[in-house]
Amino acid sequence: MIFLNSSASPRIHFATRSLTILLVWCAIAVLCSLYAAIPLLPLIGEEFNTPLTTTAWTGTSFSIGYMIGCLFFGALSDRYGTRLIILIGMFLLAIISPLVGLSTSLLSIILMRAFQGIIAASYAPAALAYIAESYPEHSKITTLGYLSTGMLSAGVIGQLFSGAITATLHWSYVFYSLGIIYLISAMLLTWTFRQNQSIRIRLHSSSTSYSLRQQYMAVIGNRKLYPVFLITITILFAFVAMYTLLGVQLNSSTFNLSQGDILLVRGFGIVGILLSPLAGELVKRMRFTMILKMNLAISLFSAIAMGYSTGVTIVVFFSICFVAGIALTTPILVALISRLAEAGTATLAINLYSLVLFLGAALGPLAAAYSIVYVGLQLSYALLALLLSLSFITTYFVHKID
Image 1 (cartoon, one colour):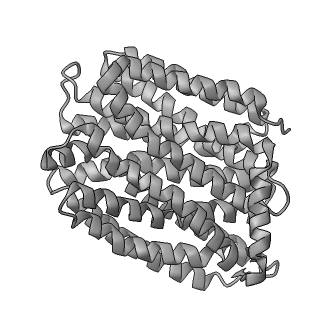
Image 2: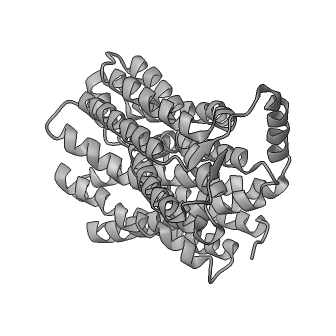
Image 3: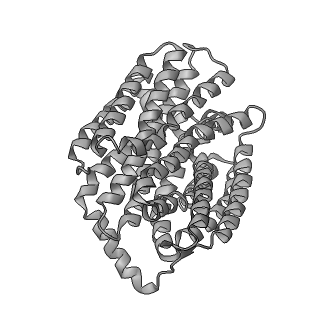
């Protein structure tokens, strides 16, 4: 649990702002591990002579590991404090990431990616819980928007990062580079936490273990959260699946693009992601559920349009719209969960949110790969839109918050 010392207010505001910037940077760095693998799928498949449906497990294993880690690190961060867990996780990522690049078989890559996902789960739930619990209400949603921007920006930055490296180097250098980035980030976090002595950690005693189980049961038993979790599972599913479909679409003979052009098209998605902090302004003017409906509608109609587009300009435009809808949805979901959770259970509810979010990320690339094989690209986009339409319908069951 995090507490702010009310004295030395100007120093606290400066320290909090600096920490927020670093938290966003780390969110980008950590989740780049997931998205950087998307452009590597054809390269790994070519090296080990495996089809896309098999190499897609290099992404799915990471997400499965992430889900497991959310439960494990969620309990540890609640007991020992978020800062300690974030630091340990970042240093461990600096060690395990290069080991992925050193793997000599597809099976070893999949296993190391699973371990990488478990360790990566130490970060996002702790950072989201920190913001949800310690930031004032008037700036909480905007700050969650910044963190969500970082998390989703990794979806584009990670692909650009790996694409730029593999343009001249072997794919393994992507993971060597990530290891260096995590080591630098861990050192920056250590220095920032030491400078920020106004934030301290309360260590929970072992007597709280039963209370922790009660809190998990309270979250699971809170039916108000169910519709929000149902929507959550589709968010990263749709995001990862869309980029998997887009990669196949851009590599087709219809567009005849170079790898540099494809990298540029992927990069345009950052425009939509940068809209995420605007969620804080939207909640001042609209209901939470109305914002969800609007954003999901934008993404589902964009998915349909992308499937029927034959011009690269139109595909770029609707990919930006698709990403914008997803980017504006994520901070609203976190804010809804923190408000709908019962007293004392917000941290664990956000941990479960992360687990559900990455369940979708685990299924996204596999579903997209099999969908392309069995029903084709155009119908795959239509199925993606159908999934988002089900989330749109689910918004009518979300508990209304003014």
